[in-house]
Amino acid sequence: MDVKGRARGTTVQSEDEMDLRRGPWTVDEDFTLINYIANHGEGRWNSLARCAGLKRTGKSCRLRWLNYLRPDVRRGNITLEEQLMILDLHSRWGNRWSKIAQHLPGRTDNEIKNYWRTRVQKHAKQLKCDVNSKQFKDTMRYLWMPRLVERIQAAATAPTTSTAQAVAINGTSSIGSATSSITSTNTNHHLINNNNHDIHAGQMVLPPAGFNNLGQRDFGGTAQITPSYTPENSSTGASSSDSYGAPQIISPVSDLTDYYNIPVSNNPSQDYFPVGYPDGQSLTSPSGNYFNTGLMDLQAMEQSNQWMDGAPDTSDNLWNVEDMWFLQQQLNNMNSLI
DNA sequence: AAGGCGGACAACCGCCTAGAT
DNA sequence: CATCTAGGCGGTTGTCCGCCT
Image (cartoon, rainbow, N blue to C red; front, side, top):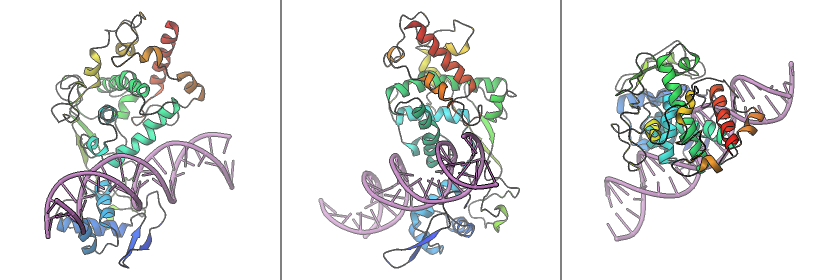
């Protein structure tokens, strides 16, 4: 790789005097590992590293393979659907990254972890609250996740809008129907080159034609993902913590429908407001009265203009301009009731 | 144009667990 | 049953890149 990150690899002396390399992987090392696994399969990483002639620890080889070299690893922007999945799964499982990753085909735990830390935690920080606080979790659950659903719906029905472009959906995406099969092109945005090559188990790997001079690679092809993440086929948080099997996927919509009114205004976002709103009689979330007492400092965020840092409306941004407007609207509404 | 700063992410570290001996 | 080892997992670090001043 050597795309970005660490400087050139270094070597260290291990206990048995064997030179062990550390730091970024070189193109040669990558191909050595890929070739070896193609011919011998993966597993037994320590001996694999030895037999392949790699001066790396088994752990390092395993990590490199699983997080980067594996042919089915999916790279590129986290889609809206994936964001929704991550938020929802994290809300129930916490930092169980590998478990969460199991439900996001092609995504690695490392990638999800990085996404969480760089995007979600950043916004928690902007809100001046702990990412694990009830306040933040409620905001996720009752404001942002429904908002994401809304954006997904919008993307599905109006694929030429800016939001839809960010989702990169080809084919059908039917939120609210039995299943949602989404065919997403592989968006190896920072690894793209013009020399696609597929790697199959047991197949000799070509010379580094698929790598550019930075060691960047592209396995080409398309990634098929089927989130199965729809209101109808979902359960609520009432299910047991480990029951998140494929047929039983939680949707924040179904989670929320028990608590939300039918829309009462022209603002579609208010579909997601808790029962009683905007009458002000019961501004309580199912898990407490956050809406009365736990307001976050959205105004401060607006003042600092940190909401809209980066691309304002891309799929890897949790909150875009519309969201900002939406949250601000809710803030104003709530303030008027207090 | 240059320097500072934060985002992004690959890679490493340490702990834990399960299976083998 | 105790010990060892490999693999898995979550947390953390290091460094490049791009934006901003």
